Image (cartoon, rainbow, N blue to C red):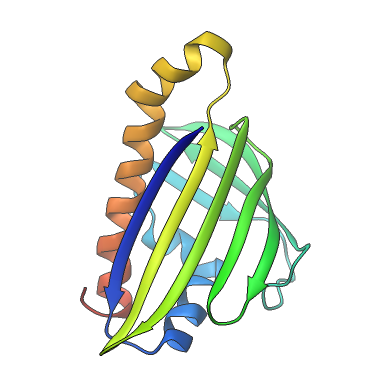
Length: 150
């Protein structure tokens, strides 16, 4: 199981950060150009446990179907989504929001498995991990621009 963790401060209340990061329509605005994301699920109320959200994504031009399943929601402190269908053997993303002096600390914790048998670790090292790092680097920069400086 591979892991990736990121933390970022935003000078806004936890509720504002929650609203921003749970708005599925915002996802494409803070993802890199090599990772195009289209939300397919038409009617999307506030996040709730058991919710499924369908996406079409392109990673370096290669199309993938992706469905996320919302496992838990603890407004405005955390939510967890996992891949129900997609390119990974498994993918779980924990989103944590902490009220801190002057704003909110958002922590992302990913746990994923690439699959592909013995090729998995090599694919992770050469392609998957660097792509995830680039996605989170871009997300960090663009969300800071849209929500407030980090």
